[in-house]
Image (cartoon, rainbow, N blue to C red; front, side, top):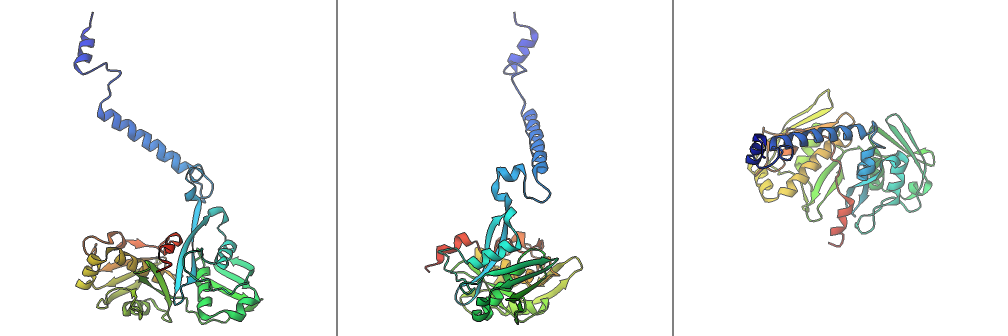
Length: 316
């Protein structure tokens, strides 16, 4: 005989211990998500090296480094990942001296046979002693590549390079202008003798001399350059129709150009920890491009040029 409860259950589509309301299902999923997030949080080691999550997702256990090579005319920053437990200044130097990956079309500017005799990190000062082969054949661009690569190590404020124990004389300013090569889809770097942030911005807005390279439209003007005590450099520029048109016609290029602008001010200024870009209050460019790069704090881009992708244009 069916009871009144059985009838009620049947009218609702089945036994009460089988059916679950959408609200209960959502609540259960939310609880599981919270538990999972807690497990992930606990699995992350304080130094980010060895954890259950890293062992499960091994790419989280890698560190990105920036190496500077050449393309025949300019310095080319290359982003490469190395295992985090092997990420040391010594590994950075050895990786750099080994040269770019095959097939990228890039040039190792270091004279063949150069080795690092010693690598010493003392606080924020990195000292590298290279073999005599380097001193005999190194060009100004080679020296710039060495200094910029060493300065890319986190927390480095000063680089000292010696050759067989003798200090290497250099006129490097430590500042680079990053412009975009649209054809090869990569950022390239030009050394500059401008040493103040305001002067560096003026140099960037002057644009590259090489017509193959792309910077911001030439009619943009600086409005304010302000370095606060919190290591945040605020750059305010005019917004012009030329910028909107550039963003509409070249949505990917304008993003890379802004990344180059951000990298320009995150390179060579130890007192700059991040950059804030503002174009007269606009939160987007063109049809919404680059919204996440404007009016928000931008540290040094982790990837300037992905070495794995450069081979696409090596034969161009």
